[in-house]
Image (cartoon, rainbow, N blue to C red):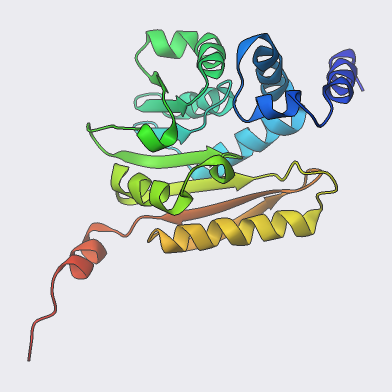
Length: 231
C-alpha cells in the first residue's frame, strides 16, 4: 500500500459514520471539499467510474450526460472518448462542480465539457438530445427516481444508451447487497420504459453493479405512439 492509500485510509477512519458521511451525499464547505477529494482519489471510485464509462461504449461524436458528476472523475473519462462531442455534468453541490471544473479545465475551455449546478429534479435542457447517460451511486438520492428516469429517457435520442451504477457503501455490504441493488436499478429502468437491459459486475469490495439499457429505437417508439387501426 503506497503512502496516498494509507493517508486515504486514515481519513476514512477519522471520517466515521456520523456528520461527515452526509457530505458524500451533498458536499458543502470545507468538509465537503475533503469529501470530494476522497471521492476523486479513492482507487475503487476511480476504477468504478472508468469501468462504467467503458461499458457505456461512448463514441467520438457522442453527446453524453452524467447526473451526479461529483468531482468529475467520470466526466474526464467520458471526455477522452467523446473527443468531437459534448459531455454534460450535473450536480447539486457547488463544491463538486468546482472540483469537476478544475479536473476538466482543458476540456471545458475546448467546449467539450459543460457543467451544470442544479438538483436533478430541476434539470432543464432543451437543446439537441443525448446519445448516452450515466449515473454512478446517485440514483438512490434522487426524489422519485422513476420520474427522473422518464425525463432522462426524453433527453436521450431513440436508441440512446444509459448506465446506472451502484456500489453499496452501507456497513457490511456484500456481493448479495450489490446484486439486490442491481435488481432495484433494473426495475426502475423497466418502469421508465428502457429496454434490452443487461447487468455487469465489477469485482470490488463490495462489487459494483452496472445496469445498462436503451431507449426504444425510433421505429419502436412510433409503433407505441401510433394507435392501432380498428379492423
